Length: 160
Image 1 (cartoon, rainbow, N blue to C red):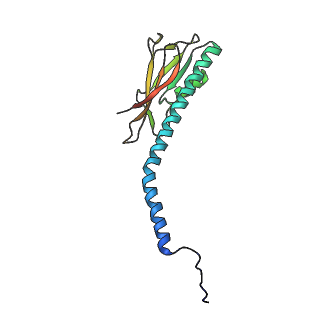
Image 2: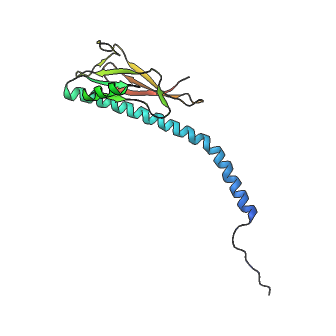
Image 3: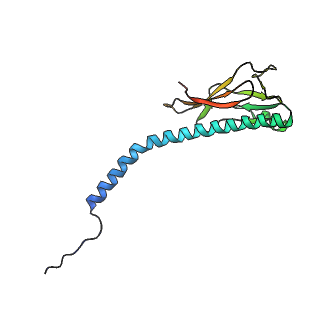
């Protein structure tokens, strides 16, 4: 009877095929992973903005005072003044930006919302669009505030 020696391990060909398959899968997955990260960043910014707006509305109602939210890029002196006054500040981070630019929104103690840079109460809904800056991405989130102060993310939009 002959002794047959059993070889343990993998051959070089088997290892090369495995590495090639993994490389192909990685090449396919990388673009979709980047898209996923951009979507997560946009969702994070949207949720943070909605959270700040809800907080401002709550503070206005509980403390019976006007509360302003400075949205967009504001200089350091304005941030300091707004914090001292008890107002709130929000700016997008990462690859997100506000399509509507910077503005201030004020919640009144009675629940109403002041129009942008005006002493009048907003007449209709206030909508603004948060977009993704990626070159080929047209993803956006539309946030709406009713004149009664109800804050909601309306839908996913297109920044094109």
